[in-house]
Image (cartoon, rainbow, N blue to C red):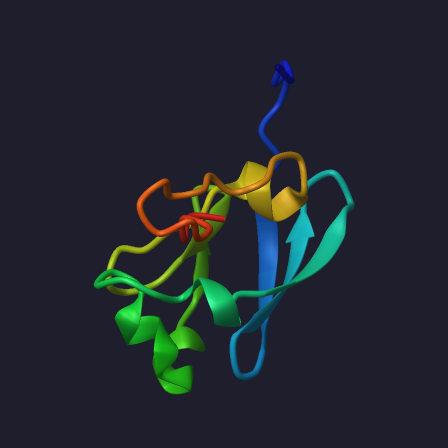
Length: 95
């Protein structure tokens, strides 16, 4: 098991349409993530609208949307992989 010594914080986000994000972290790391295949389920359905997806903001060190969805900064940073749903055998959309 990986020991977490510090949770990286997202300091900036830029949308890369339709469902991509360019993220900047407080440790200098930048990452591009494509969430197109992760936007399933009732909480993530509104994010399938590119205009709504583009309303992403940085709050408390991670990315958030107006409907309350936020994403795990450790996964977005690349330190951990998303959990897998045993029922659907798909990645749980909390990357």
